[in-house]
Image 1 (cartoon, one colour):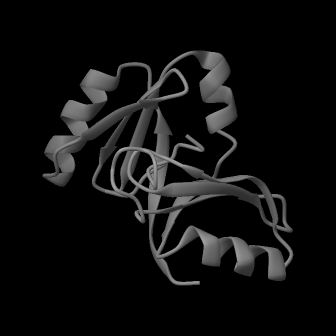
Image 2 (cartoon, helix red, strand yellow):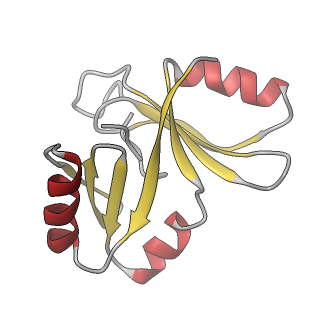
Length: 132
């Protein structure tokens, strides 16, 4: 399994103010989408999420989003080394994702961009995560 990068997940109260700050900080434009009632903005290596507290409570349990070349390969490798895949792989706006619990109890989202961008082949999850 080839790991391409990681994205830091940040739950925010004011998405617009946070997007303004992180766009200026990184020099990157936000890629925005909604997933499961949560507004998401991917800015550089930051994934900003805002929405109902009940949804954010779940999202906070995911340590980070890990970009991989292929989610199916990640699924195989994770299972072989003792992780438990608890969700996915499922389509996302730009690829596919899955959520896995590592043997130490940490939870990670794995995403790829092996899709056509319309959610039918689908990697910007957020468990709901994305890499930018």
